[in-house]
Length: 254
Image (cartoon, rainbow, N blue to C red; front, side, top):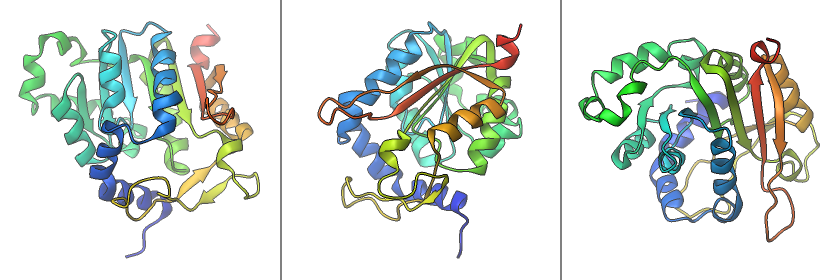
């Protein structure tokens, strides 16, 4: 069967949900342990949010880290196996939801439907205030934006998910570091699990964007860049990632 690039991304993560969970929980990814985990938590916490939507939450580590700061987190991911792992650990609300469903504005319907299927969530009184949550103080995507059309469509919807004064935060690969020896231009790239264990299979393609393209995409999506952070890897002295912190232009123009 031939899959589109966007479909291959989902197919790959479905296959690799188990080894990914192990890699994250056993702290096998050096850059995350040395730099990027801490900086994304610090960035989110710096805005003093009460509620956070974690899009592409994976096995839920970021939700758990933010929960430790008394933040209510709703995590969503398109991979059921990862959501199952996140739910098992707790410290947040987790739902299976594709980026396409969020982009189509269906996220609330799915959220309400699944609320009645997750009795344990309804029994958790400390999280009941999020049951009918329409918007969030922070929406975060931490290394979870791999596609082209799917990402562009998702970003157009983000403003509707933000509370007044809310922030949208992306952490992703730094374009200058991720480009490698290939031309510095937008386009699909072959994936690789080169630095991971042999348990990983079938690496997914991913869509490379230049720094200018990222900033342009945010602007076209109705988002205003408020801050750009380039965390430095302590061993290489080079950027380990880039973080974009934005607000809706509807808020900024009021």
